[in-house]
Image 1 (tube, rainbow, N blue to C red):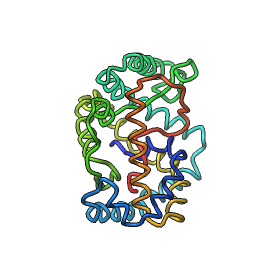
Image 2 (cartoon, rainbow, N blue to C red):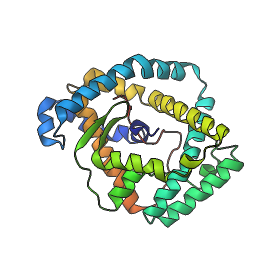
Image 3 (cartoon, rainbow, N blue to C red):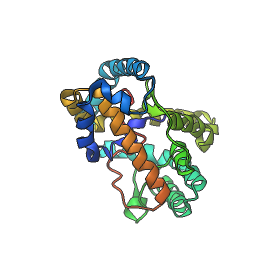
Length: 256
């Protein structure tokens, strides 16, 4: 499952001023934002918060407090490596061929020398990680975001990115690998990726919940800014040195 809060985590610190500014706007911000069904979206958001508070947060806090950092890095690297085929497809669709070659090299090296991606030797050898998804691809092609959407158990999105998520399932090569062991590994990796990403955003979301006057508007604004920057990154198409120790994607807290 693709979760929007894991991508957002590496950008989250850059948008803190905008987050609090949005929080001061209360519901009036719905008028300025592209959120025509804000009342319905806020209702779904409330349900997502309930699940986050009672299910995902307790698991993430236990994970953060008890799992050694070396194991966390291995889990993050393993999950990121399984994302590489999807990233490769989108790199090609975006016409970012230097990025696509970088992604192919990363996947080949980390899947072998890196023991199925647990160790990120490619990063150390000058092949940095980047993310890509079909929502970004649509943005690179010039498709606008459309109205905001709050998805049950998935969090903040918009019409373009929701369409991209659905298309991304079809375009992801691993979707069609039905071997029993592969399916189990993919499922376990998705679950671990969600918990790992949530654990890495706990401090920020705790701060938002404590200090923001309108948590929904704050997170909506932050997500929109992240996605806009993410699409610009795809348009530029550069291979950049990034810190893979910081969770990537897709994302915010899925439940927030």
